[in-house]
Image 1 (cartoon, rainbow, N blue to C red):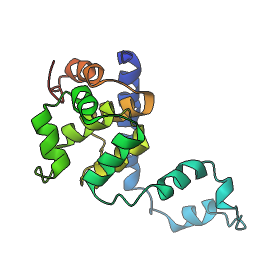
Image 2: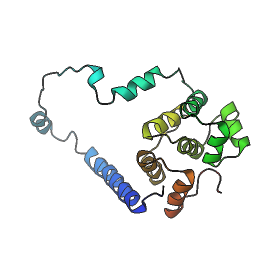
Image 3: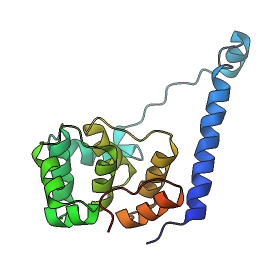
Length: 180
């Protein structure tokens, strides 16, 4: 499935606008205590069972997952959850078997963000799962343009690494994974 570049451009523009607006507001948050007092309303505490929360199913799934604290354990967990073989994953990620082996065996102490994103794309992870995998590697998606492209793709995908690379090249970034 090809990425809709115009939708991606609109997403980046929207997110960049939100960031600019937040930066503009930073200096104005505590200007007037009176304004804050007027806008804060005290509402009664509403209690809700966690089971009724809209995201309870996803949370329950994460909590029932085996203890996968580190990056490699979590990567293996997602590979097994998606029912993929190692060759399917590294081929879809555009990696060589040697590169994948170094990552999965822990010989690569700190994998690059682009490698982890390529693996997440290969596994067809959604944004929450991709963010989880990235965080296990000590990484995250920030508000920079390249990361916004990744974020868009995880939200609207699944997309292949090749499709994401087409979008990256369109915006002047280097492709991720091995270029086929």
